[in-house]
Length: 430
Image (cartoon, rainbow, N blue to C red; front, side):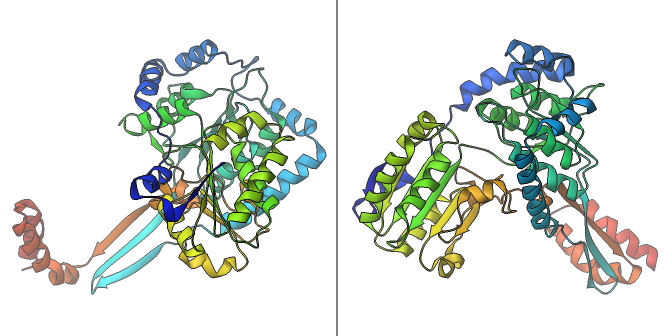
């Protein structure tokens, strides 16, 4: 990785390091728009035709059958099955605590306001199936959706051989999901967003994907006939803050575990130790040799860098401006810096908290804001699958107390009908 010294960078150079690679969405939109438009008109049939055109293969059925779910459970490796069970248990325990509470409060005598949460009735989950089948994402999306109480949870994931990976189907099954379609790409997003008589549309779509999936999600989210989405998504990223006490091999592993996600992933090391930075680079070179996705990791490292900071405080200041998806604090007294973290998707504290633990099984969710969006977005949770409704009940005494306030404000905004809605009640009272 390229190495920079923070103290030697000017403002423009710092801003360049803080920026992300931009996706040329204009050209991607031009590819995706016709797909969505056709699916909006012709529903499932159009989605199937596009999927076949793009090389997908459904086998005998586009929808996964009960027999396929059962077959997957029989064919999955026993140890992998046990690992998925453990991960699912931890994710469920952590997410059950997130269920939001309703509340009611009397703001003034006779004025009672309340807020109540309900699950989104129908949601769609997109699980990538390209170079890596992310069955862990199935758990991260399916478990909170079920905890929230979503009535319908539908999954779409691509396949090229007509069969879904057994681990992915098993993960869906233990989430309690049985509506699963073997379709991916923009066509899957269009199908979930618009639906037809054979396939009811969903109200919100969740899950990561390539630039075509991301573009499709963005487009359906601004179409009144489409649906909501979880959050804007970009390439995955990790930022490691390490001091002189950190193990170079630990840090190298953490950087490479993110680099192998995709060639556009970004890995950043910020350290107060120049010696550690050199040792980490040597560790990366040594570990790269045995990686199954070596070429992907090498491409990712071209987008990555190490930054020598004058202090850990300076490193955290840079990190808060960068707002990483994943932040690892590999520091001797990492806990002391926890309250200084303002912007991050998920934080891993101490030398024995690798990002891969959160990706799979510690219990936190791995669907996180990228591209600096952790400045204003949270990672996915149970609340993401819910929405709230506010209620108010006002008595005659209550409307009497608040009437002058409402009338004065409505008159000032020249909204006469608003004021009249209160005045007529006051006149009726007399």
